[in-house]
Length: 358
Image (cartoon, rainbow, N blue to C red; front, side, top):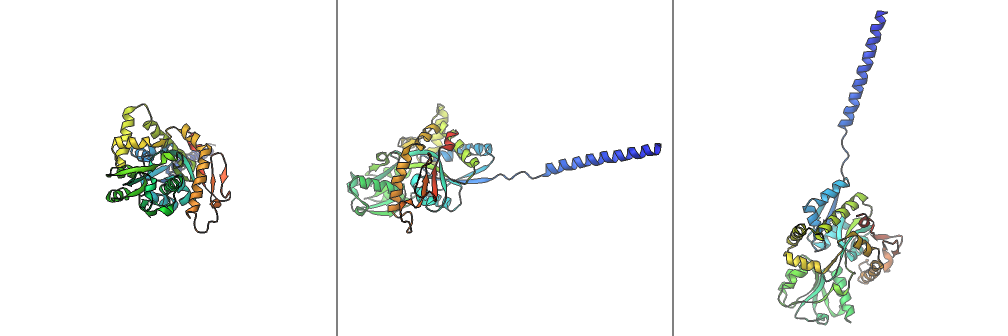
């Protein structure tokens, strides 16, 4: 009997040791399991008064804060050539990129990349302009070479200015010029004529004899500056970008004067402007400092009306490609669900969803 008890005790001890060992092993396996990989997204931006906030957000760790909050990593890259930044986005090098409403249509959307404007940051209200020497009005453009980034919003503004003044592109000659070079080229040209945006516009305005003969305040709400994201990108990226953006907007428009000045000084320096020059540029930019104001604009009928103008201009200029039979080639969806163009080929979308969430 005693022998049996010893055997039973031995068996119970073995079971206990095995159980403890198994538990230790399972705990060890759980501990050794590799953590889930954090997804990294790439965002491009270029110098423009309405986009300098992205550089500041990166500098201050605000991008990282919102990326961490949404369980992702975001790498923000400054591209000095604006059109090149959009080309890189269209080629798949970036998941998001700053661009205007027109360029979003004519480059990625026409190129087959389904994109969504998730942040309407501002519209140009004098920040884009036609600048000339030895001139007083648009009529003085006749017979001149006009340097600009061809088929960009600069070209759109030129077309609108000519049309509003009874002229056409037959009266001038356009010369494609990079935004990185246009200010220096204008300065060296004694009879220069350019169409550009800030900051190169302000740099070019320092040239002797320079005069603005037309600017975007005459076409308010038509040149819209956005953060565009691949439509199939996850909500985590879109939420993080919107959160970071409106945190910076709160600083720029807040009551903390020291924080506001520090932010504006950083943006001014990075853009190549003085603080006073940068503030002057902001005056000609209709910034939407609050998500509520941006949402109101995005959900209005004005955006759809503007895009009707833009798509007509784009098609007339051949920006839809040689095979395009009409401006309906690409579909665009607006915040209210309306679609213009091909409903089976929607490639550009405007939404207030992520702004409303702020």
